[in-house]
Length: 341
Image (tube, rainbow, N blue to C red; front, top):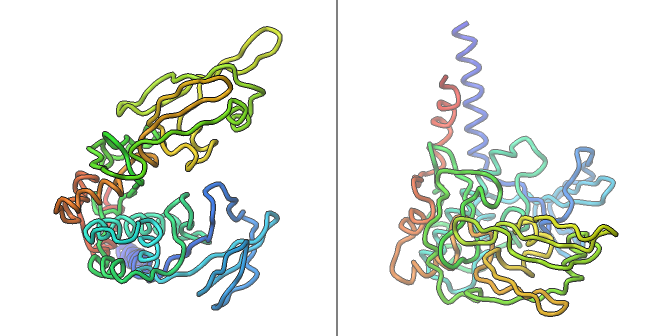
């Protein structure tokens, strides 16, 4: 019996080590967060190394094409660190401070490793859209290449596991609690100072007609829209919609601000940190920041780097209680923790 248990343990250890050592990640090339994903019935119709033009985009490298009733899907098999370079190049502006680039490299690697482990048995590990993190292909910036190489293998961990390293473009005030966005509480994602400064989204204004909002919400018409509640960080939590009702009058309901933002478009409504006014048939949103507000603020990291902070200090600020470790050291501890009663 002891021999059998030892064999099972050895096999599990081998597979766990292989999962971490596998130097590639499978990326579903998906341009939109709302785009369809391959169904369980999707079939692989081709695997090759080369180039493919699909949906207006040219993909190159090691590719697999899937097909189901909804259409074709392209999965790109990318060397892991090359993928991290591509993500940093896609997520960050040109000529950013090197310490901010290093911080982004670590959290993009951590985020990718988290989902690679979670989706190890699936057709793909991660998508190339803001559904996960943006990947537009190869990096050509030597500074980004240096930042990735300088932090090679480094990931943020909590209890020896890669964390769910959420990040966003910028915020004003404090970062948001994850349970306010996804109803998910994570001990290393707390509300901290944003530190953002001089970003294009320090303040913004967007105007929607009542008809546009009604169409997005699927209501016949809108009589009134108001803020119903706020989160602890001062962002809008829910809005109150008074829609045109039937003969008995008007019907009202509350909608989560995160859902409203998704329906209107993430770029169109940059964040849930807003106030609103109604002017005739228009609803005017005046807000601050861009993104869900959870985890690292990219513009905040840039500002900290400009102030002379190193990437380890930046990461410690936005992910308190985490430890920076080399991914090669994780499989054994991870497996041991899972097998401990």
